[in-house]
Image (cartoon, rainbow, N blue to C red; front, side, top):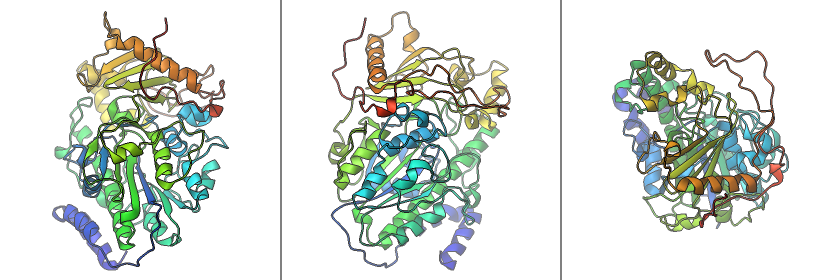
Length: 516
């Protein structure tokens, strides 16, 4: 970075009235750069945030979070409002995107830190084999190591990075490598970049961006309690998102300098929901939904949104289609290129998600169809508090304090229950907070039987299994301290060899007849 720009950044970081004006201006400035020959194949820049809920960019309706660069991308591209992850858990979600497979169809990679199996096609590797230059920078976590490329993922990239701390602006997402990757690429090849921030994962380390949001200005979700501690916690989270937004702007600025922006598809999304109670690892929309923005001047009209259902396993087949690369038989997702052409088009009527071990033992499955969400829990006798970093923090402590006084609302108390329902059915149109469990009513809707059958069919066709020897909880519930001993149990799908099963389960209507 030139000395004057570095000086401006430091000044902006210390002067609240100038911070956001500087960030916006810094991205809008363009310098005359080297003209790079374009090809008929589009370039791809894939930017994935860490632990960010769908509503937590300004363009998704949260006015308190400052994301001018991401908002600008949304205004120049397409914003998806019903994009779902296959898991609201770090490594299973990323591995699923990487391979276009459900987590249990990756067996060991279905659980947090589980290893990605050998021999599974990975879409960046397929791009690389077809002539693309592929590079990674930042967080990895394709199973196994979180900050260093390991296992099969190494072969997917010509150049891999790591999540080492950036000594200028903080963070552990390798953002200091992003521009270097773009500048160091071969000039005559189309390129694919996987840029993975550590923002907004706990612990908070926004450094230069700390304090850019005031606790008084945050929006406290109804499932949290409005205390000074909760507001301060959320303000730190907002700061982390603004840092991600800054680096998104840096990438756009560099693509503009190189004169390749118009032929580059930019994708911005997250791996799972915010690291707060009721979000990360949960099937509430703040956990399992992702923001998804795609900008591509050559193929997408500017501005607008699509409410069509999208699964994160659909990203890989979509990008391969745009690149003119044949999809492998192992992909379980579907291409949503038709939606890029017509935002009202649909490519699926069902999305599925799963929650497996992530600190706490779990086997929970979800299907969404229209506005209906059905959830099935194999072990209802167990608590489902979420990930350790969501259940042991200032916001969670505030919930626990009022829970001890019996002062929580039913919505706020959900994550503190000693067990969870075996079945849940919600109508998101009438009950977006998912408080009224229609499955427990004396006369449940007819859709309950239909969605039971749909989820059963998906389970059977994809080879999902409930582990006989599950991975045990590795934290002490009352304190959050790690247990003295830990051993890895069976992952879902192991007994059925689900890694060899390619069937995707139901994708489009009509729905099957419920079983008797």
